Image (cartoon, one colour):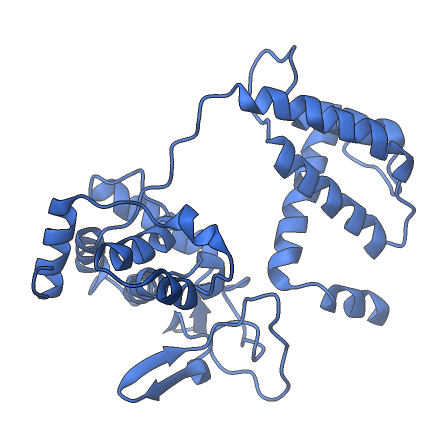
Length: 299
């Protein structure tokens, strides 16, 4: 329906992806109760039972499948939006009890051992990764290029990858070849996955990160890239690294080299102090090795 498409267009693509994760989680909850089919609106009991099922409780036997209270709150917001899309009434009378249940889950979250922080990709890691991937195939060459941009651009995987592996890209939504410009000898890439991005009209060019095969252009999807990277990191003896690690490595090396915080925030497109989450201290040896690989003088 035209109205459905217009409602969907009001949300960013990344927002819809997160909403989809929430509906999948709710579907798993229903499957756990042998309820494979259901209709909207969901009931008040569904809301309460879902919160108890997905969130941590004092009487849980294990944490398998449990999510944090903060993530659960986001999922509930997504479920509300799901109802909005289908023009179904959401049981808002559950708000008070749900708030208390989330508070109780938060207390259990605090008792969990701290999660291991994301490790940064080092310049040495990036060099080994590109050497491993480059020259193997058109797809792996494209992933190597993406990895370099992710590191130095301090970019999220979702900013550089595509929802589908086929099809032309709508301008001003994801990176395309037309988004690359040369300014004073420097290549500049214009990212569009920010919440303020506005879709443009006109032709639909090819993806920037992808490759061509006998069937045409293949776009790199986040799932495919993460899968390739996971195998490569395992091969290189760095299995703890992930796609998120590029966004940690980029600002960490810049800070170690004396780049100002304001410049790091600007380059990383951060407007608040959340950049602190992504900057990790590097050892002296890590910095020296990075400088040697980059052929820069020691600081």
